[in-house]
Amino acid sequence: MIQIKDVTKLYPAKEGSPTSRGGSEKRGSPGNGDAIRALDHISLHVQPGEWLSIMGPSGSGKSSLVNLIGCLDRPTIGEIWLDGQNVAGISASELNRVRAEKIGFIFQQFHLIPFLTAVENVMLAQYFHSMTDEKEATEALTRVGLGDRAHHLPSQLSGGEQQRVCIARALINDPKIILADEPTGNLDAVNEELVLRLLREFHQQGRTIVMVTHDPVVARLADRRIEFHHGKIASQEVFAMADDEQFDEVLEELWVLGEHGEIAEVERMEVHGALPVSLAIEKMMAMGLVISAPHPPEAHDHRPFINPCHDALKPVSASVGDGTLVVELTPRGRDRAGSIIRRHRLAERLFTDSLAMDSESEIEQQACKFEHILSPEATDKICAFLGHPRTCPHGAPIPPGACCGGEQRFENLSQRLERAESGRRYTRDEMNERR
Ligand code: ADP
Ligand code: MG
Image: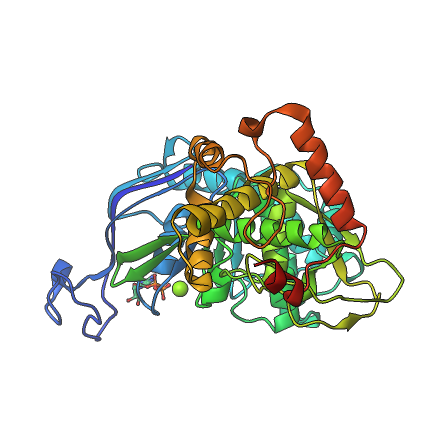
């Protein structure tokens, strides 16, 4: 979608000031040697639908790159391919066209026209793209929660509201690429949350997002993070893999809660991983692994039980049925959760029975690693090797695999699950007894 090939961007040095940056350009000397090297041989590929976040100290070149991708400026050297077109060498009017058609901008400084109302600011973007349509512009404002503020001037709106006008403006022409330069930099927590929620929606709709941010937590929402230093990419980190493991942990937790007939309340779940649980759950909903439901109205107690895999739940507490979010596995989520649980519990069996490991914490640690990496073939081989065991060393059922064969196994499992769901619980004492 976006391909940056060996791009360098030089700016002429400011009048009377020595260049603030290193590089091959000499400080204080006149002419071309005085240029500021904002981007220094950058190459970068952003996949369609990818969300990339860019971090780095002030002056490291982040905005320069965003402006180049956004066709607001041209590189000194190098190529920039957007959606199959090299925009590095095209004319100013062609740049304007590409920008209007492909790009939506969200800036920290909003850049709204002060003497136009919210809806007129959105319509201006329509005008540059094709033709204005007030109804559509008003609908866009309604989608960002500003339907009743359409005829206010920017000065009559809060920072958060202005940023939402920008988002409506950025989206009005249905761009494939969203460029956000510190989109939450000037916002309070409530508006930050709103803006990030909208960005997540765009991501789910399959748009490509490039976002500059100073906030590591915000950066973590992306699929990948790169870090700029002195106009170069100093490091990069891909999050998708780590997210996947966290999703596994959540699925595992949901499975075990289900085994014990417990409702999965998002607020009570503490699952290791970089994402807040509520955000992990949102991503998993988008992937079709879980669905959410409001909490049932009846207040109920949480019974103590032990999750043999992780002590991930908050301590026992009574919870009120006050509308907290509850999640359930979809059939797909249930499949994936069952396989994770199966790998984990088979690994526990292997370590305990065959390898005679006796440190409970070591067994858990290893099983937690194996649950993510065992292939289906390896899992079935271990299962066969162990004689298709029905329970883990703690007595919790092992979901049968294809290798276990026969409907008998499945019946047994579902019977066991039914029993579990009708109130069977493993308390800590019971677990110890079984050992
Ligand atoms: P960041 O967004 O990471 O803070 P920028 O891309 O805005 O960094 O700036 C990179 C360097 O280029 C800085 O030294 C900055 O002063 C310089 N720079 C940016 N834009 C211009 C410009 N239009 N004219 C001259 N220098 C510029
Ligand atoms: Mg900047």
